Amino acid sequence: MQVSRLLKYTPWLALFALAGVAHAQTMTEAVYIALEQYPSILASRAKSAAADADITRAQGAHYPQVSWSGTQSTYGNGNSGANSWIQSPTVNMNVWAGGKIQADVDRSKALSSASQQQQKITKDEVALLVIEAYLNWSRGLDLVKLAKENVATHQKIMNDIKKISDVDRGRGADLSQARVRYENATLSLQQREAELGIAAQRLNRMLLGKMPSKPTGMNDMPGTIPAKAEQAAAEINDRHPVIAQKIAEMEAARANVDNAKSQYSPTVNVSYGKQTTQGSGQGDYIAQLTVNMPIFSGGSTVGAVDQAQGQLRALEFEVKEARLTQREKLLSAWSDWKTAQERSKIGKGQSATGQSVVDSYLKQFMIGKRSLLDVLNVQADQYSYKSNAIIASYDEKAYRARVLAAMGKLAISYQIKQFQKKSG
Image (cartoon, rainbow, N blue to C red; front, side):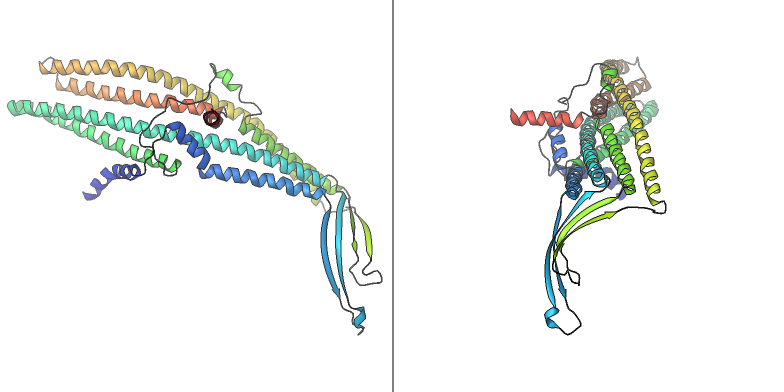
């Protein structure tokens, strides 16, 4: 019994805990917080910086490499004068590597571009997550409020029937029926409260503990959606972050092919420095030209080229698949958005009509023209109408955000709005 009571009040305990650190912020401000501070955003930013640094590493091989070495030589002939300490600054420079160095640079640049596109993808994902979390929390508050009103209505009906039953003992069945509906309404309220607690915890996680005090600004969503689905689908091009990332990965794979093929080519290196090995020329400055020509590698070069070409072909197909799946994702979100708009309109109309029917049935019941079952059924219908209207209203906003995310325009819309606000 104590466990059931604890479970019953757990959602509210969670909400009270969150309320202690509540902040006043709109949904737009919540998105700003997530885009600037959420860990996955920071992680993608760090990975992008690491990829940029790798370009510098790869380009460094084009330049001369300067080093210093010191060699102490001791001879075993007992002549201490022959013992020598030689310091040698050395310059090494690659003259020809068969395109290997440039292939490594091209690969690093392509992976840097892919990392930048992944950063855009992550921002869209995080923006969508925080928007949906915010909307689910606000929807949960509205549904809990509606469920409480439903409980209050059923309690009033039950109390009225109890008064009638006290006078007319033959109405005991009506009282039992009213009590069952009241208990069912109470269970529905508990379910809504549990859902609200989960939604609040998720939003609190997305905002890193900066929980809003109340939901506001949900109708102030930036971004423009074209009038027609096909116009929106035109945004699914090679500049779309998901597709651009795959194209960048494909370019990196092409650079890997060039890198593998470079193993067929000779390499030429030049070095200049003091000779440190023991001998007649020890301590003299010498220039060396080194040519390395591969003759036989046991098939390792052929295997490396075939592997790189296979990975390139796979990524070419992945680019084609990305174009198809992103278009499908956008059109599905568009369809859901339009359907939610229609459901919202119908739900509002049903709620208005349903409320007048409930009021009418209650009056008719009091004068004996309607049965209790009629009243309970129409109240259940009205609760369903209002619930569906609330859900559809929030679905419309959530699916609009999904359309923008599928277009690759969600996060950038908020970033532009934030920039305009700061600059103006």
